[in-house]
Image 1: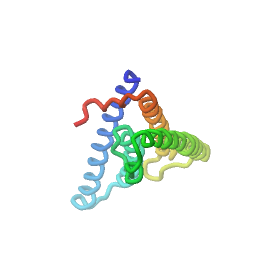
Image 2: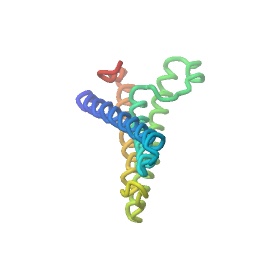
Image 3: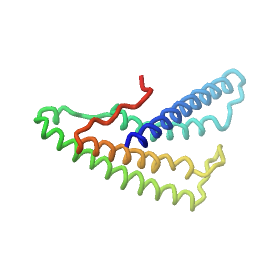
Image 4: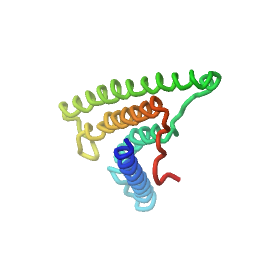
Length: 166
C-alpha cells in the first residue's frame, strides 16, 4: 500500500503547489494589467476560476489524506474506543461510497455531457469538460484514500503520514 500511497502523495503535493503558484501569478497579472497598464487581460478571471476549481477539488482529496479536512468529533469522542473504531469504519465507508457515486459517477456524467454538448469556455476557448474533470478525479483520489484508511482501520495499523509534510 505504501508503495502506491507515497508516489500519489508526492505528485499531489507538487501538483497543488504548481496550481497555487499559477493562481497567484494569474491574479497578480490581472491586478497589474487592470490597474497599472489600464488594459485588463481577458483570460485571467476565467483562468483563475478554473484554477480555483482544480485547487478546491484536488485539495479536498489531499486534505482528506492528511486528515486536515473538516470533521466533527464532538459526538464520537463521547463513545468508547471500540465504538469509535466501528464508527470510523462506517463513516469511512460512507465517504468512499459518496466519492464513488456522487463524485466519480455524477462528475463523470457531467464531464461527458459537457464534452458531448461541446460547451466551451468563453475566454480560454477550451472545453468546459477539461475544467470539470477535476470532480471525478478528486472522487477517485478520495475513494482511494478512503480504501487505504479502511485497510488501516481493519488491520489496526495507522495510515502512514505524508512524506515531506511540515
